[in-house]
Image 1 (tube, helix red, strand yellow):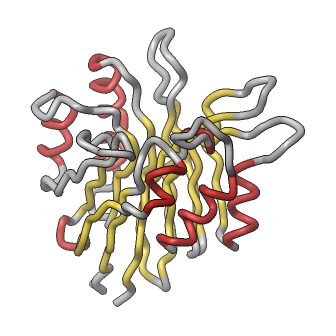
Image 2: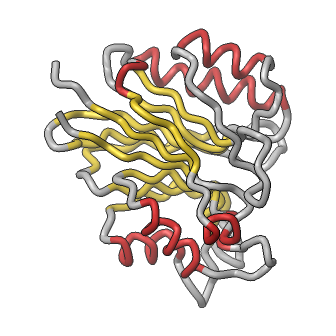
Length: 231
């Protein structure tokens, strides 16, 4: 049965805790973790300099899907998904709420050595009401296809442990551990989260805490080990 390492990482546009931009540091963190699937947030391209997601995909040899939420003169910005396995199909979901910062999600069907896995990668908003509506939109994706093995992962920006967004997620998914990932220097907030369906496919959930990861972004990578049992 295939084992899959899946990681979520808010790369903060490539700007580290020292205030310096370094795509190379982000790449080195990705290589440290060596995940099969990456859900990336705050992926920022720099016009005339670097198309961050495409560059990371080339350097790692992974396939990529862009979930751009903002198109700017200075470069596009949003979510990204990288995968070592074939990506069979994708859907981009617009989670934008009123006049707040545009948000979105990438829903990807991935063929993991013959075992299908649906990965929904997202970055939610800063206001509680915003997150409540966004969570309902995300849960609709899973309710449409309830029999599939699936993962919801990303930066949920949810720090209220008993807030309605988390309660609704726990009501649908079995609760999973929530290790702290933010801020990277001394994390105490579990902003980056992961749930699986069914719960049994999640074997481990840890935070990658290397010295490089502590410097490269304001978030630490959240790393899950999945085991896809054959049916």
